[in-house]
Image 1 (tube, helix red, strand yellow):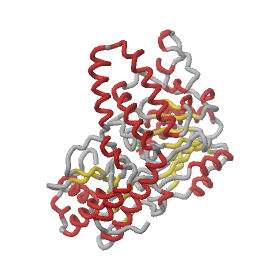
Image 2 (cartoon, protein in one colour):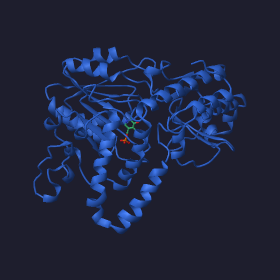
Image 3 (cartoon, helix red, strand yellow):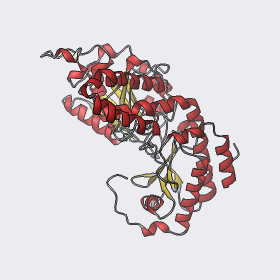
Image 4 (cartoon, protein in one colour):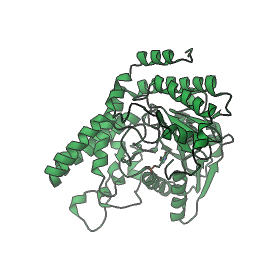
Length: 424
Ligand SMILES: Cc1ncc(COP(=O)(O)O)c(C=O)c1O
């Protein structure tokens, strides 16, 4: 598309946007706030506000323990069904529980047990650090017999699929990669890597945290083995909402959860004194799930399903292309670099800008009087602008770039200190 560098053009894109009605599905805290951090924590859906009121007042307040059978167990199933739909899987292959880190621990331990002759684990330097810490802890738990190889990115933006494929050998037990990487938004080619690594006998666990809800995912069609992902970013599940895990139906019976808790048992309410593992995907449960957070997911996920993943992707490709166009048109003289692949097929739904004053620019965007724009910051110099097709508009993107230019023109970032907040 031929973009134009003016507000009228941004408005004309909004007028043609078939998803614009979904903006009204979300709580809008202030007129002068533009939220561009849905890649970290999605906005609050109004449906969720309503549902949580019911969960607190009626289900917990009035019905108390009876709600387990009446609402909470059925809701756990309906949340699993919705995730399954969004990631292209069968209900029998999806569990919703715990955090991404814990689910990765459970799955990677199970894979190392399954593939016990191979002693190499591969990940990359673009991966989310918690994934790497988890792999280190799994190796430690297995008696330090495995080698962790971290494939380095030369430009901190991407690594080719070929490099990952060529790095693996018959020694490789497990590969753990983020589908969309957290700093640069680079997107791996899951079908290609999955197909090639299967030939080498290595299992792959895909971390879908930054792709789920922003990129169509077809785990069954792509013949994937394992995946984990979070629900609080593009799926708008709320802070700390439960994560999910996926195991291909052909592998469930071969895997063992390393943490044996009562909700992973064959029949928790038999209260047997010795553990018998469930034969279904529910073997990956451990303890009682956070029902309030899990309930919030039911309504949030439905918005994504209603909007449709193909429509969501079509819009976020257009939004990221428009943002890149505006950056090139307006910010090229300010020593700013784009830290995201320029080819839309190779990226997710955030754009990263690199500038040596990135943190203070980010603070100026968030904290200045008047208009407030919320992106986030990842060390050393990355400002991430997450674009959510459900609630962001082209006008917001235009205004955000105009504001960055103003901050750089006036050196406004100099009014802010370099002290880092606990969460950036
Ligand atoms: C790609 C990725 N993986 C894993 C995690 C960790 O998730 P959790 O805190 O649910 O363990 C995050 C958190 O932001 C993430 O972005």
